[in-house]
Length: 237
Image 1 (cartoon, rainbow, N blue to C red):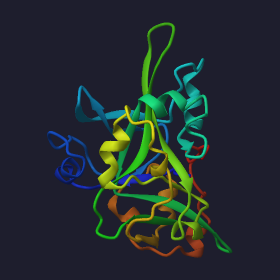
Image 2 (image 1 turned 45 degrees about the vertical axis):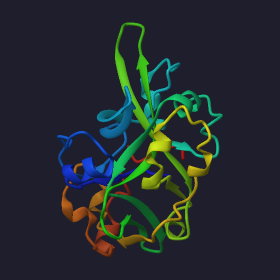
Image 3 (image 1 turned 90 degrees about the vertical axis):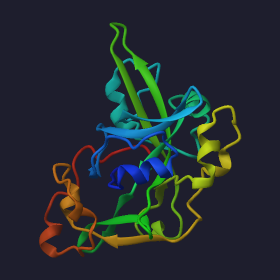
Image 4 (image 1 turned 90 degrees about the horizontal axis):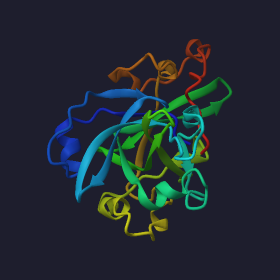
């Protein structure tokens, strides 16, 4: 699954990586959690744009938008057939920029959070889907989800799932919803080795959002007494 991630790359680096017309007006975030607004990259009128959407996809047919809190992830194995995600997979694919993500490893001392990123710290992209929900009284919610798949050999030591990381050379293909045959992209990351290291359990609390969260900081017995994570660390994939 993917329940926490961070985007701390410089806006100019994000614009360059995702071929945006200008650098986005966003601040570094080190502890992005479900239900929060997150930046996504999509194509509108033939041009890429970065917009903010709520993390946790609310299906078009939902009666209650609170269901989005349970839709933060979409499983790659069923995303094309699952009623909640099928329309978005065919028509509303997006990229979710990230600088790294977190997974928790079960140990005899409790669950230890780890930070996972590219070795050169460049920004990369999760495969995402987005949707627009409208209530009967006119409320509009734009929301998104991150597609997950089975973990590769690096992440498997921590968790059996990982977010789908789209190779940079395939950004355009994933974003082009006229191309339905993108199933080959929904696989564990097989590119360059990822950098993985333990971090402080301070990341368990959403209120903590600073650069020290991604730094190497092996857990201590004292940290293990902290809560595992906030209730928003949840998902279906």
